[in-house]
Image (tube, rainbow, N blue to C red):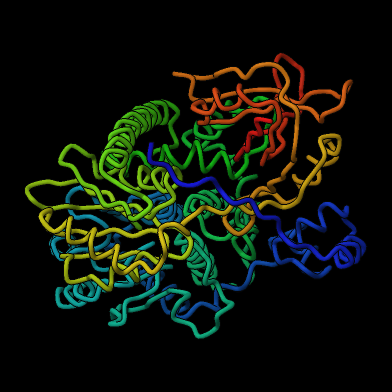
Length: 584
């Protein structure tokens, strides 16, 4: 079986003296202080802002370039009753950005049109056919959200056809900047500290804030618009978390308060998404970033991956309960289909890797097939990277054209690598850890060979490293520790949920397979001493290691402690990230 080498475990280095000082300065436990230091939060002031974020800490939107010009042009269009269209994207960030702006127009009583791109027809972003269609429909002002910063030709065509364009985006612009009426993008400011990590919906939130001020001609928002902006936090959190941007600074504030607003939402569509997510864990009633990442986000994304993102947008905006019921059934159906298709492709990919790849020599996995659905290839590529620890570029082939999604590993900047062999592609783009591209299917072998040459890593050294926060003894795992961990929520990119290690534990009894087809496994562990209580450990998607665990008598674990509630009783259990079995 061709698998990546076992993971390297490494502990984060913490200055114990500084930990004691920070605990005192921030009025927090030493455990919380250690976790803060491991996340780069090294002063009392930073710790207070991190542990106790406030909405007043959000920076003024006026810091963003051209945001006031954008607000003036849009409000002018409202005053003149011009035809306005909002153009978004088909992922969660793009859908929530579109919804946020549409909610503003609804708030001020202005009817506008919207368009979301079709992944299978026009693909991501604007294209000239869309511009011509909108012009023929009489659109006078086009507002792009979560896209537009690389649409030079399309924006130039819009100007020729008499249509103004306002771009609101968070992607790094291309070298040849488009020339819209206003371009709201944090990458266009020289200040490295301002808003660079915002998702598209974060930039849109700033634009809507500026629009509210411009509409009322008051810098301080009225109670009506203040309440409206607070309601908008839910959508801002949803798009921010789903787009996997770093959850610190502005993003942490949006996520923290936005999750509360999502939980409280009276919108029937949002409420149904939230309630379905909370059913995953009966022990709590508060929403977490994990709920967004593993339940709400995938359902919204599934619409854009397999059919039309419009279904997801209509669900988020739904005011009618019956309509929301109908739309959430569509999203559930598409998400279940996405899971099934993804599982089938993943199995096929793994079979091919094990039949045709020598990972002691290959630096990247490049595969394609006419039967693979392009809408799920990014997800499958991520699973391939997780299993084999090689960058993966998977393609769907149709009529001789290969369209693919790539995911990478630490040390391999995927978009830079694609640039070096850019002559093979018809088009490509992305960033360090994720990219995509289109090329002639007959060139896939050339691409595989080229990327193996370009990637400057020794295959024997391509071993995954897992960094954990600290080692614990089992007796240290209690409700107080879980309360300390909860102080750091919401978790996500840049603030991962704390990961702990405990070494040399005794395996108690026999492991048991769980779930459909025995994909998961549970077992009990305790310190090697009689009379010590045993803790339950659950290893998701590690069912194939059941025999290995059964053969051993000692084990070391990387895990996250969680509360498991069942029939009114709550117990702490360990959710396993990785394990090492000792057979003697």
